[in-house]
Image (cartoon, rainbow, N blue to C red; front, side, top):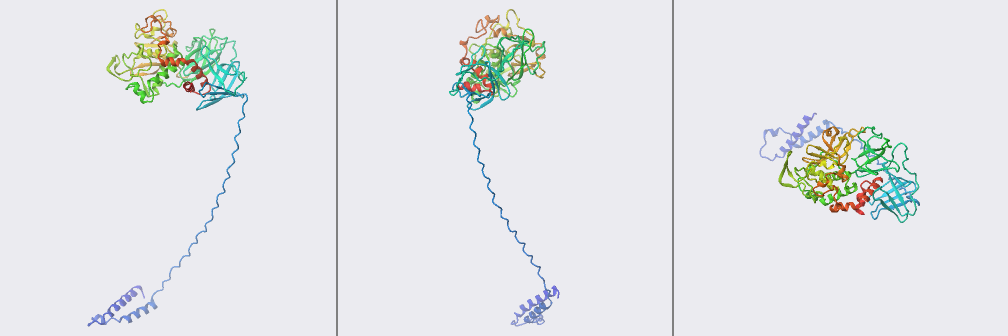
Length: 551
């Protein structure tokens, strides 16, 4: 029997049950007579289901998948902590000598194995040394070597500066000896065929050169090559004494000297790493548009601190010198650049009265009335080109405020007659002047742009609208301009000195008229120079400033 018939039987059974429940009703419909009684119908459906309904075989129940028995993870075997080997106790060097510099916290230990260790409160340096024949040779970790004359009496180690104050270090309590260690010396051998550089060293940007006793030199040259320039090279410049000093732009050089017979020394390698900033055309800087005093205070410094910093650089470079005048210019720009600013140009912005010393707190302040010149209108306090050069030389103790020359300040270098200090462009040195029309620039240094061993351009200090900056001009650029040798100003021998507007008869400002910050800087200038030479030789760049403050 198919599923349809089974369904019909179930329906019939359901109807029979319903109708059977209605038997007590008074009447029955004709259809009811045709329907089998409910019990009988039920029996029939049950019987039919028992005999004809298909048997449904249930699907076999799948056997449950046995869960994997977890494998126990073995506990890691702890790695035994190695027992640290005891740090070996350094074996004291009974021949080591330790020297100190006052109460500054600086010490220099010379070990018997030829090594040194220099210690400051916040850092230290190490290298090699040799001491013999009165010369202390220091080789820093970067390979830079410096030779310093010395004397030693067992209690003091005196580092000698020829013609200047010496630097004296005192022995530590546990140092007892009569002489410095006898290590191989580095005294340059006397040459029968040429002069010998005993030693040279750089303090900031000023290189000091001393010749070996018994030798002389008339000219010097700095080159980026280890071979000297040709005999007729324009890079040979006059030696002015022994020792002699030169302002140099940062870089690695070989120094040569030659004598009156044309004999040339061996190359002497020297590195200048002054720490000064040289923003060409004031790139990245803004001309002051608020008073300098306010800007400095906002930057966490002051005009007083700026004056002291520049004065310290000048004092170390040397007052009344080319090197001091150029250092004044470079240091001023550099310290302003460190704050992100430079000094604005102001037409007719003179700054050369007797009491005009140092940074003007009002540089950058807006003028009540603008000034004008042939180049434009100017709204902020600053200087013009001549004023900026007068300012730079004045901070180094030099007066060029001659009222009769006005903008012709190059004439102040005249010795005997009108413009007898005019020179060729290739003869210019640091501290000389260049004039074009009524505009002036001061030479900072000669530079070799293409690194072929011959200088081909000048680094210049220039105030030109809109601000003070450095400028690089090639020899060709300046060839047609006027060039002035300013030796007479630095040597105080200018024929126009009697006409100086402020200090009559001299270009050297009397020291009693110096400002207090310059007077203070000069008190320890030579000692600071010697300290800077030593710390730089040891590889402690910038340490001399720290030690000066702690002194």
